[in-house]
Structure formats: structure tokens, C-alpha cells
Image (tube, rainbow, N blue to C red; front, side, top):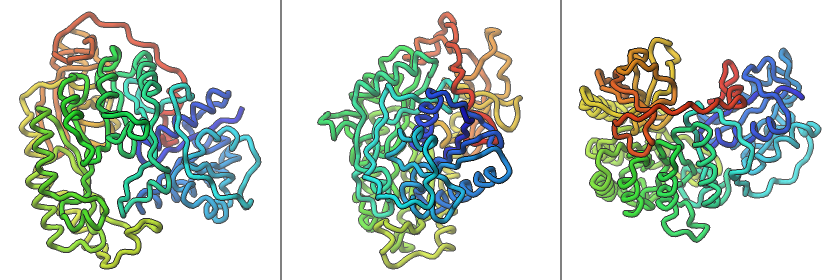
Length: 488
């Protein structure tokens, strides 16, 4: 069987698609390699959400195309959002690409690899994406063995003017409730300590299935699984944050006291132009309700600056809002035109220099807030999940607090991993009690006080119990984690 190498770009939702494709191939006998120069088949799973992501995808395709000239590669497959958006153009303009796999064609990866090259061949337009994987779908995890994503829904029905996800991913559709639960159970039994639920809008989960309070009910069920320690979810839509959801997060210790809620702006006029609705005033009331219901919750959001028609007054209103809201984590995107998005046709575009200046200023405001909030944690103790040695130095380990989502938020650096109080050597995936010793703009430094890995995971209440045997590593997932082939 040929060796296959994967590069996965973009968001965790795209990573899950890559894991499913890898699982299908591994289950059919294909060998997966982390080395691009050894791969006989290369698959680039692309992102096309914003212009920089699109450029990165194109550059990566061209980079991998070189391996058809100087490496072992005989086939180059392009998958994901860029393939869904520009399938014919990719096949026509990049002759090294042999085939494309759209977002709704993930399960066809095997047939695509084994079939004849399709570049230059006329194709009928692909049907709207409708694919959803399930708990029985083969999947080879590319994340560390103690953490995994679970995609609980696909697509989106929101009309945001800047976004083409509904065109790329199709209408919103939820996975079956029991399928999600079974997948979480299987992951827990395999040694996963933390699962992160993802979807374009997780707060709409179950609405299309007729479920009332679908996400809170799902979280409540997952919080009772014995093998999991932390359960979190990403991408709240603000008008879907209900009292039941907040009360559920507050009630169950296993549910991470963390919410990622992209607000996009605070100006009422800008939110209306974005087809989002609401206002900064309403958002502040929502944040007050969240913090009042979930003590200690950490909040993340993201904003777009330079959206067509954004005036200096709109931007100043956003700056004032960020100062008042005091988010723990925040990302800022400079607006970029995307053809087929509703905003593409809007007038009063903001120039790139102004967009960059506004982004830098907003991030500077947030940096001061973040530094102050993190400094307040110095001298206090928190449970943390050990991730393993840092990429910068094996002498320093990385960890995350409950309020730090994998890959997107700050990190906790541990400098004394070998010196545990009870003589045991912590390992990646362990839950430890950490005392914070230093704080920076986005990251923390701490020391291990106690090893807590044996908790019944539920409460993380700093009470030791007998150490449980470690689950055996999954040999398949190890092949997806090496350099130079990137699984991002």
C-alpha cells in the first residue's frame, strides 16, 4: 500500500475531517507517514475562511506539489474549504493536483486516492455538503492522546455578511445525541482526559433534531462519563446562550468554566451591517449574567475591525467595550474581502493601513487587560492539565488551566516537572495542582505542588487517590504527529 501524508490547515473542525480521512485510509491498510518526502500520496486539507488562510492554503499546495517533482509523491489531493470553493480552478490552474475532495466528500477519500487523476476533466457541480461522521466512522486522532475534539454539528444557518461558511459547509445539521455520547465514551476509555466539542455554532446543537436545550442536555450527559476530566465547547452564538446552558456549566465540575463567544463587534450599526444584530450594551449585560452564574469563568471572544463602513466612532465604541468587558482572551481579525460573501458588495471599504492600525490598537488594549488579570493569579493554586515538553526546550513543560482552550489561548509553563511532592514523575495527560509563580501578557509560569491524576476526574478537588494504570497508547495515532509533515 502507498504511504500517505496529511497536512491539515485551519480550524479544529477541519482537523477532525483530516482525522476521519486518515482513519478511513489506515483502516484500509494504508500507511501514514509524517514525512512529506516519503509520502507517495499527499493530502492537503485546506482552509478558505479569510484571505490569509486562503493564501496559506495555496502556498502549501504549491509547496507539496514540489514533492511530485523531487520526492516520492505520485498523487496530490486537495481537500477542505478551498477545494469546495474553487474545485474547478484548482484542477485547471495547478496541474500537479490530481483530484479534489470537498467538505461534503470526506468519506470519498479512499475512492479518490485509488481512482484515476481528475485534473482537466469536466465535472458536474458538487451537491450541497451534507456529510456528517458518526461514532462508528474510522478516525485516527492527530492530537495528543489525552485530548480530542468531537464535532457535534456541521454547517451553519446564520446570515453573517462576512462569512461564506454556509456555502462551504452547507446547512446546519446536528449529529445524533447518542452517537456523540458513544464517541465520548470510546475516547475516554482510550485514555482521553479532555474533550472539546466543536461546530460552527455549538449552541444551536439539536435544534434541527427537535431537541430542546440540546447543548445543555448533551453537556450534562458527558459530565457524568467516568473517564473524562474536562469537557469544553467552542463557538457560542451570543443569542443562543440560555440560562439553562449557564446553569449546567456551573453545576457540573467536569464542565470547563470557559466560554468562547465570538461577538465580532460592539457597535450597533456595525453589528447590523454584519447581519449579526444586538449591541455592546446587550453584550455587557450578557457577560454580567454569565459571570454571575458561573463563578471564575474565563471568557474568550473575537472581533473584526475594518468591516466596510466602520467609522472611527464605531471603532472607538469597540475599544470602550473591550475595556469594560475585560475578556480573559481575545482575538482580532482585520477584515478582508471574500467574494461571494454579502460584505463583498458593500461600499465604504476601509483601507488596509487603517485596518492594521485598528487591530494593533485593540490588541494593545487587550494585552494590558490580560496582563493584569493573569498577574492576579500569581501565588494561587489551580488544577492544570500537563501537555508535555515545550517545543522550545525539553526542560520546560507546557500545561493548561481549565480556562485555557487547546491551541488558541495562552499557556502555563512548568519549570520543575521532575520534582513532584510525592516522588512520582508527572507525564503528559496528568492533572496536577500548580502554584502560579509568574505572569506575562498571555502566559503563566508555575510549579507543581501535587499530582492529581488519579482523581475520579469529576471534581478536581485536590484530593489524592490511588494512581490508576495508564491506558495503552494507540499506535495508529502516533504516525500523525511528526515533522516535517504538518498536522496543525
